[in-house]
Image (cartoon, rainbow, N blue to C red; front, side):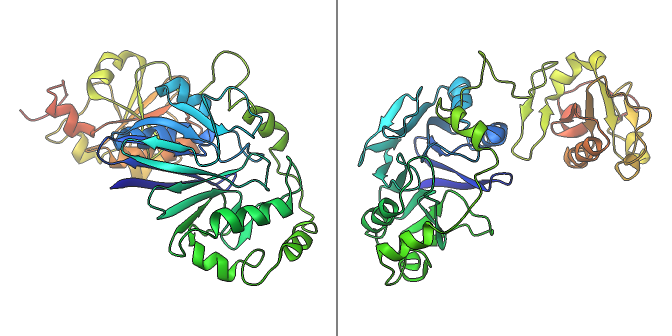
Amino acid sequence: MIIFRQLFDPESSTYTYLIADSVSREAVLVDPVFEQFRRDGALIRDLNLKLVATVESHVHADHVTGAWLFRQDVGSNIMISKNSGARGADVYLDHLDKVAFGNRYLEVRETPGHTAGCISLVMDDESFVMTGDCLLVRGAGRTDFQGGSASTLYRSVHSQIFTLPDACLIFPGHDYRGLTVSSVGEEKSFNPRLGGQLAESDFVGYMNNLGLAHPKKMKEAVPANMVCGKPDGEAADRGQPEWAPLKFTFAGFWEIEPRVLEEHLGDVQVLDVREPSEYDGPLGHIAGSVSIPLGELSGHCEGLSKDRPIVSVCRAGGRSAQAINLLRREGFDNAVNLAGGMLRWRAENLPVENGAE
């Protein structure tokens, strides 16, 4: 069995794909986005996976890749087409190369046309293909810059994708309408640019008259992706708080373990968002904590400082996670959640005030 996740970046409408061998736990990440590094890394940790490679379907013009960040973080190899012109990758891929993870692999198919260095990645059993910006759901990638060619794209799709089984699922690199998946059979029949009886000349005429503006991030993204996402300077600012060892969750917030919080109580503000009856109830509360029930938090943060980290606390960690969202709206950016809440705190025999024995 494989593990498969389709992830989405709303700013660029990019799909990132996580594929892993469920036995070895080795994983590959396709088209990671720089700004989603923490989110994707959290998912990989949650699923207990080992990331062995990030693979770029091409040099992107609408977002910066997160490939360099993952190589710095976990040592994963950066892979991209040899025809991309990019520098700094660990592996340059040829047509029909295999990207291995555990006992499974993705087959590389060169599908130029959107750019000169585009590839599609076919699962070893041909159950699905990740087409990057080559073939989209009921659409196709533009062909008007980065060495693009409408004729080349038409031939790529028909020779490398439409020759796959009709039941093979198609997972695109982007979608702007909320569409997530199609199939080879569907696109062969219904794609308005490439399907049915449309000839190469029809496709070329269609693509040469799109009149699209260039992507907003093109001037930033293309130079960065030509060096596989390596930022200027020796290190990247990932926005990770430095006052304590924290864990970023797939839900999008930082968490602190109870014993780590105990060691840093003098450095933080502890915000308890339980109801007053709970705050003074059997679980007790952390000494020095501020009690503001979750339902009263919005607009009532006057007693909290934006200059010191805030640790949000509740019974089990759910309400306190929601409190972080409310704090962000109030301008408190350095807020983290207590993992497991007061239940974990008490289970680890950490000190409380007013708690039952």
